[in-house]
Image (cartoon, rainbow, N blue to C red; front, side, top):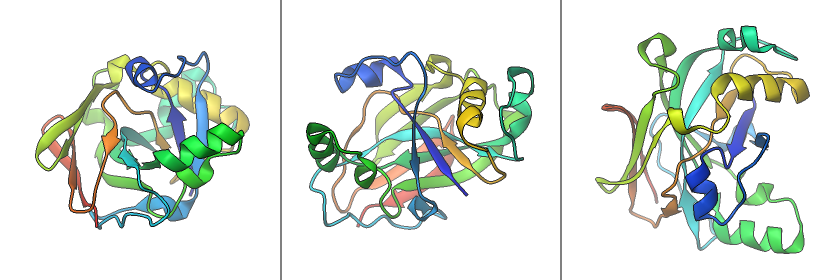
Length: 202
């Protein structure tokens, strides 16, 4: 199982971090050990003092594919989920300053929270509203209508470089509103009114 993540896929998020809006998908990966499922708690890593949440719609790939064409991309996922891409922002900043890769800021153990999945037939792909609450207060809100690169575009692009396999995840990008967490925070994610995950930071 592979975890693909897309950076800067909402213009307002790129702006809030002072980054340019990409002209093609910005892809990075997390290892399988990054996945945190079943509403298990997240343990704050000892190597960071500035950990940020980023809520994202997640696609679950349902069959293998390579060089997938646009007309067929929609057949490669049947379920939609929601997750968190945890980022050690201080570690990421230090890596960027030195021109180093920043996987250690993104791919550490349990940095990819993933909740339950819904059948895509129950949702409108270009109008999925989602939000994240921190301690019962809404801190992020997004809608897939604002994606720079939509689901099918991401599937086609990624599959030109990596073989997509059944069970892979694609984290499709985070909207504006990312921010820090501390021990004791509880993060709860929703698609519409449906609760998708509940994660305590310890």
